[in-house]
Image (cartoon, rainbow, N blue to C red; front, side, top):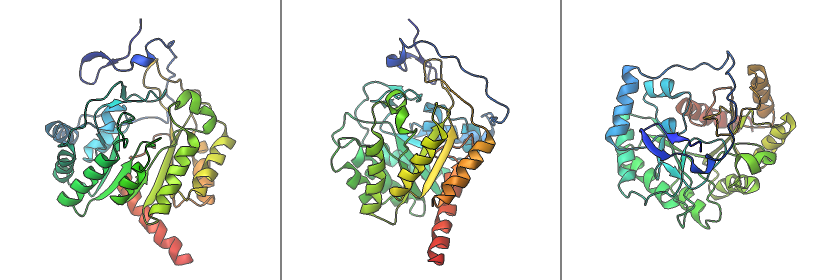
Length: 320
C-alpha cells in the first residue's frame, strides 16, 4: 500500500491516510516561468528559529509553499493556528489530515510574541479546518487577533479562515475581533468542488464573504483561487462576478502545483499572458486589487498588498 508520509518532521505516521489508496498521478515538469528562490539564507534561518522557539506551525511549511525562500528571508511567515492536522481532506492540499489535538490555550500569546520578535508590520494568520469544534475555532481566531493587538498594536492583521460550515455564530465572533483583512479562499470554480474541495460548499463560501461586509463594511475582504485544475475560462469569469456580488475587494489567482503523486493532478500550466488577462478582466469587474501570476499565493506580498488595498479604496472614494 502506498502511503504519503510526513517528511517535514521525519514523522512515520501517514500524512494523508485518506489518500493512501488513490492511484498515483503523474507530476508534470514545471514550465520555465515557474522558478523560485531556494530557502536557506541567514535571514531565512533566523525566521525559522523564531518559529521553532515559539513552537508554532506555519502554512509556509505545511502546505509546501513555493515562496517560502523569498518570504522567510524577509521575515514574513504565515502562522497556521489550531494545530497541524485538518479535519478535511481536500484533494489539492498538503496539510496533514486526521483527528486534531485539543486547542492550545497558550498559542495566541506565542503567536503574538513571534509577531513582535519578527517585527512584522502586517501579519497573516490562517488555520486548519476544525470541524470538531463547536465554533470551528472562531473564538481561538479572536484570541489570536486580540493577543497581537496587545503586544503589537501597530501591526495590521489579516486572517485566512475556514468556512465555519454549520457553525452558527462563528463568523460573528471573528468579525467582532476586527481583523484588517478577512480572507476566505474559494480555491476553485463550483464545478470542481466535488473532486477538489468535497467538504466545502461554494455558495456557502460566497455567502460567508458577503456576510463579513454586512457585519462590518470597513473590513477588507479577499478571496483566492488556483487555476490548472481543469476549470474553463468562462467559469473563472463567473466566479469573479459571484465574488463581486458579495462585494469582495481583493482577488488572488495562482497556479496549482501538485504536492505529491496522491494529490489532484495539474491538468494545465496557465501561461503568464493568461494570468495577465485574468488580472485585466478582474479589475474591469470592479475589484480594488488583483494579484494574478503563476506564483501568487494568498499571503505572498500581503503587507505590500495591504498598503495598495488601502490606497485603492481611498482613490475610489475620491472619485465618487
